[in-house]
Amino acid sequence: MSSFDFRTVPHLHIGTGSIANLARTAASVIGESKRIFLVTDIGVRNVGLMDGALASLENAVLSVQVFDGVVADPPDHVVMAACDQARDFKAEIVIGLGGGSSMDTAKLVALLLGSNQTLPEMYGVDVATGPRLPLILVPTTAGTGSEVTPISVVTTEGGVKMGVNSPPLYPDMAILDAELTYGLPRHITAATGIDAMVHAIEAYTTRLQKNPISDALALAGLKKLHGAIERACVDGSDTQAREDMLLGATLAGQAFANAPVGAVHALAYPLGGTFHVPHGLSNSLMLPPVLRYNAEAAEPLYAELASHMGLHPSTDALVEEMERIADKVGIETRLSQIGVSHNDLPKLAEDAMKITRLLVNSPKDMTLEAAHACYESVL
Image (cartoon, rainbow, N blue to C red; front, side, top):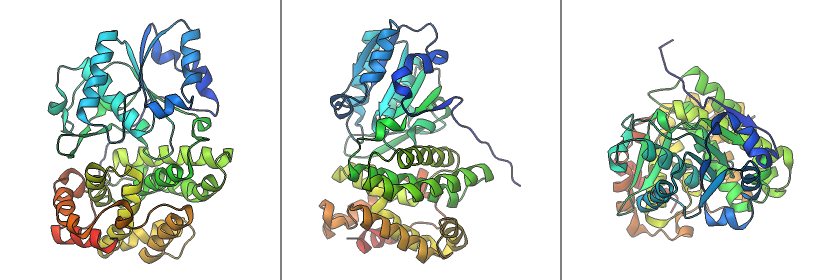
C-alpha cells in the first residue's frame, strides 16, 4: 500500500434537534468567546432555520452578529463584505449555518480574520495558512459536504470560480441536525443529494489520491444516499431518509476532502459561474457524459460502485441509474432546460479546461474537444 494522508474534522456532532442546544453542544469550541459572527443567507433566516441556534446562543449570554448576505456561488465581494462586518464586530468565533455557499463563506471569514493573507493570495491547494478564528459549521442541506472539507469556492470577476483548498479551512466542529433539512424543497433535496452522490463517485475513482479510508467512506455515503434520496423527495419529513441523506453527504464529503473530485466538477463549475446554475444541478447534468467518457479508464471502479448500489456491475448500469434518479426526482437533465445554447458550448469547454486542479484527478485525461462533446451530448 502506498503511503497517504487522511484528515477530517476533529469533532463531529450528530443529533436531530440538537441545534436548539447549540451553545451547550459547541461549548468546547466556544470556550470563553463572547462575540459570535453567524454567517447564513436570507432564505435560511426568513424560514426560521436559525431561530433555535440564535435563541440558544443568546440564552447563554453571548453576543451574536448575523450576516445574511450570502448568495449562491458566493462572489469574492460578498466574502469581503462579510469579513468587514466581522472585523467591525470584533468577532471571536465564526459559525456558518446554511448550504455550501454559507459554509464556504464562513470558512473564509474565519481564516481571513486570523491570517495576514489576502483572499487572492489564498487561491490554490495548500497555499492558505492560518491562524484563523474558531469555526463551527452547520449544514442545512444534504449535499455539499462543505462542513467536513478544507475547501471554499469563490466566484471572481468574470464568473471564474477559484478554490481555496488548505487544512486550516477544516472547522473545529461540524453539527449535523437533520431537522434543519425537513423543509427543503424537493428540487433542492434532489440536486444536493445527487451532488453528494457525485462526490462519492468521483472520490472513489480519483486518480492521484485514492486511498482505502476515502474508499470506505465513499461507499458508505453512496449507499445511504442511494437508499434515501427518492424517499426524501417524496416525503420531506421522513426522518430516517433525511438523517441518511445528511450523514451520507458528510461521509462523501470526508471522502472527497482526501481523494479529490475530478472532471464532473470541472465541467460543472462554468455552468454555475456563467449561468448561475445551482452547483448540485450542474454536477447532476454533467455526471452522465463524464462517466461515459471516463469509462475506458475507470470501468472496473464504476462496476464496483454499481454493484455496491445493487445494480449490474457496469458503467452503463451506473449511468442509467443516475439518469433514472434525476428523472424520478424531477430535476433538469438537459442543458437547454437551463438556458444553454449550442453557441455557449465553446466558452464552457474553454472555461472547464482552466480548472486544472480538478481535471488532474480524473481517471482519464480530459481534452478541450472531449469537454465540448460532453456538453453537447446533454444539450
